Length: 300
Image 1 (cartoon, rainbow, N blue to C red):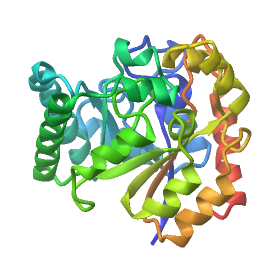
Image 2: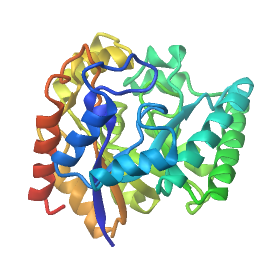
Image 3: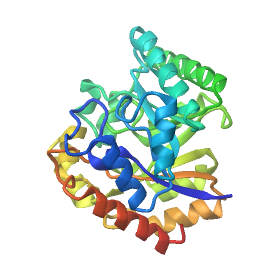
Image 4: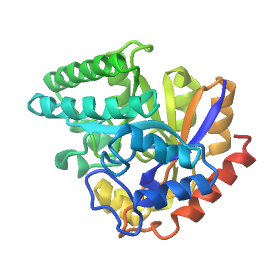
């Protein structure tokens, strides 16, 4: 069993559905991920890294990096959006499989109606999908699992602030619909805590369901300010709710110990969600180096 450590373009402000920072072309980001001591990377938004598998493999091999996964979000509860979303999944799955990855990370897309309650557990639960939307989401997820299986990929679901699978209750409902060997979880520690969960408690109960981990720290004071000000997810990110790993309030020594004790075998991805015009976007390399050193101190 082995814990492998990656970083991701999002730590450099490279995030889906926002303008990408001109200062960080993909070559620089990959150089810095490698220089910071990581052995892997996520794909980032489709098209940020080369979308040709051979070219992508070559760029990764130059830096001794492995492609661990790709984050793909589609509007799962809206059946009218499924055709477009599933086509995007198929394209992404083929690329990352050809480039050597064995896991696709699926998420519901952040939508305006849910984004307004991001991080506020009770309000979010009041806006959960109705039964027909849950049925639509489950159907789409099953199709994603089938698509990915044909190219040798497993699927782990990423709960995401500002989406319809955000709160602990929504995660529980999702996993009541799928066998444990069919759909795993990409546990994002920062999002889980921001949206009302206890990461340590979750791992104590459901570590076997966790197929990858986004190690993301959180400043609880900043998070409380964002909730009180009723910020949406992107405003909360700009406010600086997410901390460089080890500098916030999440108990990572306990998190890491639980992963080790449960024989976790997979990738942990050090991330700090930042946006180019927000808090925390000014020192991605320094933060990535510090995060890797912090994990070494914890025995990873």
